[in-house]
Amino acid sequence: MPCPTLSFNIKRIISGGQTGVDRGALDAAIEMGIQHGGWCPQGRLAEDGIIPSRYELKESNSAEYWVRTEQNVLDSDGTLIIHRGSLQGGTRLTYRLTKKHGKPCFRADLSEDPCPGAVRAWMKEYEIEILNVAGPRESSIPSISSGTRQLVVSIFEGAGRE
Image (cartoon, rainbow, N blue to C red):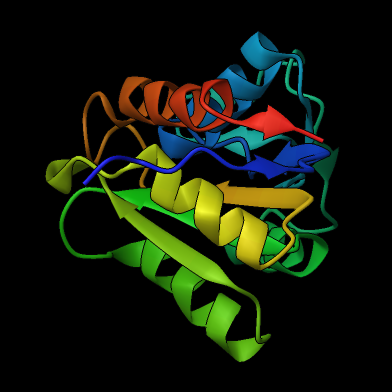
């Protein structure tokens, strides 16, 4: 089935700045010239140390990862979860928080070669302007960052932005 091409009005991509999916999405936003941001833990903490300053993130008032995870869910119009296989740890928490707060959520499993057009259709349906992108860290799924960047770029390359 061909992937649909749709126009939508994305204004910003946000994430928590962790290695893996978070940074892959932020890198794609920077590459595509889309505003980016989001909340990160106090001290800009990530599994590889301090989150680089090139990512325009705000520090939460807590070093606990779940605090920034929930704030990013709340600040977005919807969450795109990019993963491989079943949801684990913080990725599963993100999914649960979208349900708790009644926020739209789209799960894109990279092991199933997700269609960028399906993500675009979901974004159009829910009028997503601020997109939270979340998923596993790089240490739990090696190369998830590059797979995320490729998917996010393909989502926006194949769409007209209003």
